[in-house]
Length: 154
Image (cartoon, rainbow, N blue to C red; front, side):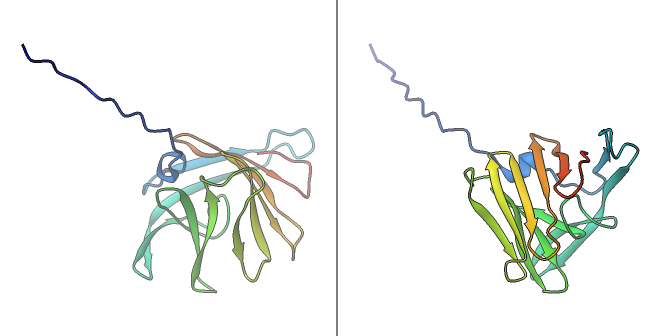
């Protein structure tokens, strides 16, 4: 009589940028302002194509993306945007960051992103003194953006 033994390996669940920030040509997000103070505003972000910079493919948003600039790409753990003026990319979200970690720096430190938790990030631009708190959801991407300079919420 033969005995079969099975070994099960359980891997810890890891956030994946491509799951939490899906990018496909044709995807779109519609944001409206639901706060009492700034009621009535709204924005639609739509992916309309792709561009290649330095051998990497970025999805092109019509106008701008929800976080900055018109170009974005995701790898296994991070979301990047491409700055055509500086001709470089910078990290927008890093899903491996822990609360309090600074996850990106752009233009000699004028824009930083701080992880508030595994799926919440805050940007801060020391030049304009403006920024947003972003909340990201599985398979949806950015579900809310709250500016820090006015009491509005999207």
